[in-house]
Length: 242
Image 1 (cartoon, rainbow, N blue to C red):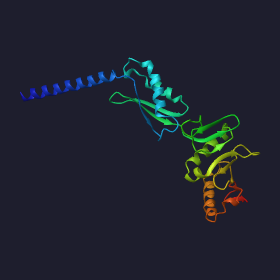
Image 2 (image 1 turned 90 degrees about the vertical axis):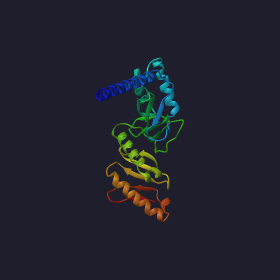
Image 3 (image 1 turned 90 degrees about the horizontal axis):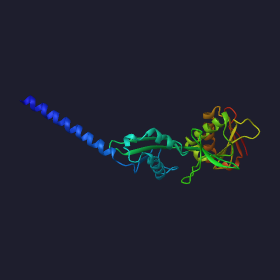
């Protein structure tokens, strides 16, 4: 008798679980696509706002009116968001409660191009990125266009500057050196107004280390404004012009 009682309890519990699961699934399927939970993966939503992402998704979801959320093609929604030039990546998901969510990775600008005809950013991956009405990034400025290996080197150097606290504060411009190969660069500084002749990207870590040591020394005796150029191209030495 006890054995039958256990079987009956187990069967009843199974039926209850199935019923609750079915009820929850039915309720979630009836939810409308009125709002989306938006999460910005890489910090603050500087270049694209929550309202913008939500509006883009809601507009795209109009094609799914009167349909359950299980029928929504999440890949299509992700592709739609990725076409926005401020968005590097987008992941769309459904929560256990049936709510639609989006994880947004914004593009990260590392260089600003300003010339006679247009102004725009390049992001850390080397993709062209428009300016934002919401936020202006403090990144080095160049008048040069990006193409080929020299363009790749320019993005590599920009990323190096962005990832170094000292360089990020001190370097405000990158230009190709006139009259030389396009892989030869010079840097413009925020303090002291010197030109740093960086050359190509060979021995890049060594050049940066020398530059930091040099600035530490001249900052101590306040002679930084005496220097016009700082040349890092020579092996194991810095050549300066006053």
